[in-house]
Length: 328
Image 1 (cartoon, rainbow, N blue to C red):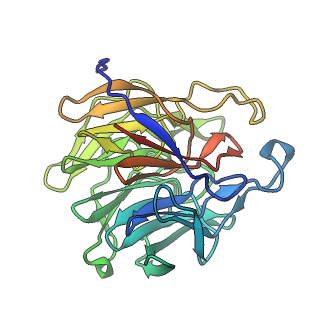
Image 2: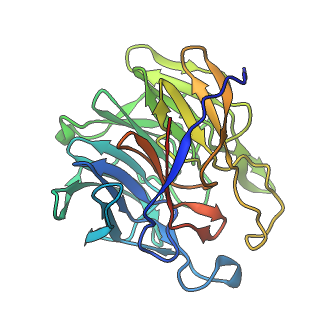
Image 3: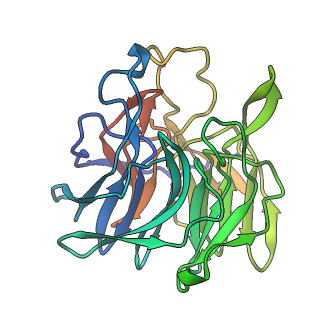
């Protein structure tokens, strides 16, 4: 169900990440009041459409405050991207992902102490994952979906949960989503439930699995289990995630709505520049207006009363080094 009573967001630009190209698929979160960004991939040597190779990064960036300068206090143990992130009191949890060698099950905690960054190893996922998403509910980190391997030939329906108060207990398997397995979907945490919104499933086509864009929406909590929600009015994948919550409503900010097809990376016009708002109280969707920058495959961080969207793809193969922030 769709209505038109739309709250609008105000947008501002934060300091650009100090990399000429920027990255897609970075990890990003907040700890001790700072914004932490790590990993991701880009095409630094020459554009994708000129045959440029994708390169993953191990760089870690920290913005101590919205008006501060970026710092680079440390590096990841290896280049990684396309994982999921959860901001916890202990630090920023970087979960799974992939690099040029394939997908990983690694889980790292990035910590900011005011002058430097520290990295802790946390329990690995039971499986390798890339293109998944995460959300935090009652101190527990929920990871759902993704692909076991790069290449978009499998789409997970399983969900894993880690109690951040007792990480040594490891990841436990939670009930799988009753709907489609998916990757590049959006997750959120709101009003005592986690939400799984849109994304990309797979279907058989021409002897291989091909993309099937989804409008399915689900919510979950451990007391009541899964609940099927009103579908999205149109498909949304690879929008900033975890999706931010303002005034009890979940905002999907741009992403890929599958309307731009048949273009080469060179002449692609860019991704969707409109937002969608979901109201859990009424199980309805509404248009949320235009966004500060149309991006895909990027994280979102709720920080200083804003939702900061970090870098991402302007179009396939073309990154951005910008950070945009929305607030009501």
